[in-house]
Length: 186
Image (cartoon, rainbow, N blue to C red; front, side, top):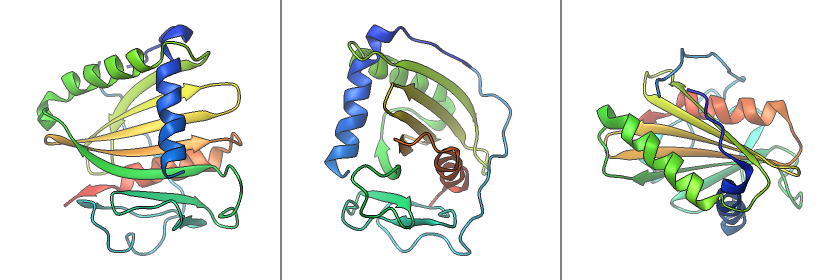
């Protein structure tokens, strides 16, 4: 699925993305293999109901991470004012995994409502993770930043891998995709 939404409908979403960053800093397509070298072990013990691998060269941003939301930055950029960053959190919803299309519609509706005044472009697509879970990806392109959200669909829950890319780094997008692709529900 590829979806474009008018610029006037993107503002609210962009503001939400910025707030998320600042707070702690339709049919699926075929599966793509966008991988980055991964760490040998899954991420350290956490309270999120899942496991994932963190690509080599990315480290946990301790000063922004909380019990419910974990942030990663590229090694060596931990003290940058606006580092490219990837956050990971799990939320709940009313949709079963089989009802993922209605979940997608709800996400698009929410993003559209929130995006009423930012001059940005919203696109979306769908695929699967390595575990064959439905994966929806939304990209919000604005002049100074690109935000990419990866929603891994579970049964009445989702995992959100959220990339805020200030530098336009392809490796940051690859790292976020690798984290999303490796995510396994517990």
